[in-house]
Amino acid sequence: MNNSLKLDLLSYRFRGFYPVVVDIETSGFNPKNNAILEIGLITLKMNNGWLEKNEILHFHIIPFKGSYISPDALAFNKININSPLRGAVTENTAFNIIFNKIYNELKKNKCKKAVVVGHNVNFDHSFIMEASKRIKTKCNNPFHNFVTFDTTSMSSLLLGQTVLAKSCHALGISFDNNQAHSALYDTDRTAELFCKLVNKWKKIGGWPPIKT
Image (cartoon, rainbow, N blue to C red; front, side, top):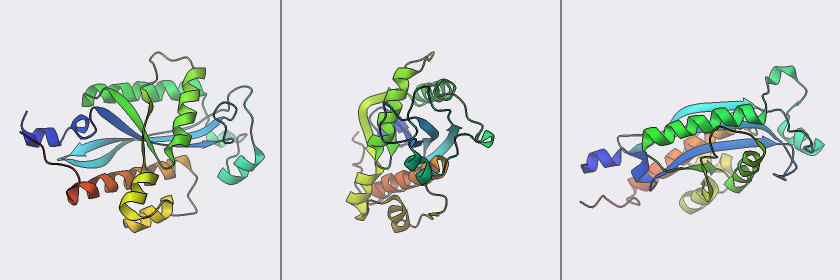
């Protein structure tokens, strides 16, 4: 395979890993006891060697049986778990669709494992890992058990910022604080940020040239 073709492979850029941008809204901070209430995911693709957003998945989720719902968490994310307008589905339904989609993307992109990308990603990753233990799925959890890509750390290195909104503004990405803490909106802004950070690193020569 020649160099130009390798440049367009997502698997080549991330050493066989497939990055998936995720944001989760929950009923608290404990991944074992608190429920996932909303999840947004955006898959990525390479376009002539430049990273871009690809497809979106988004679900409102019914709290799992026995989970603790913190009133403070609901006040913060403004989620009304009793609203029929949410169109919420079970964890099992949401994650079966998510995992199946990611496995298809892994196969298509010739990647070996998916990696969660997020802003303060340990939070989102921990909830996904716990959810995968509760649910019954036709396929195993496609996400790596401990490898993650954190846009907080990346922004700190390249921009001197750690807050999502400030990191976005530093790269000319619009950010509406009124829409913040919606999983769908935050996923979209984080995906845009991750792509710009990766592409910026390439522009300044941080991604070594391919050796023939």
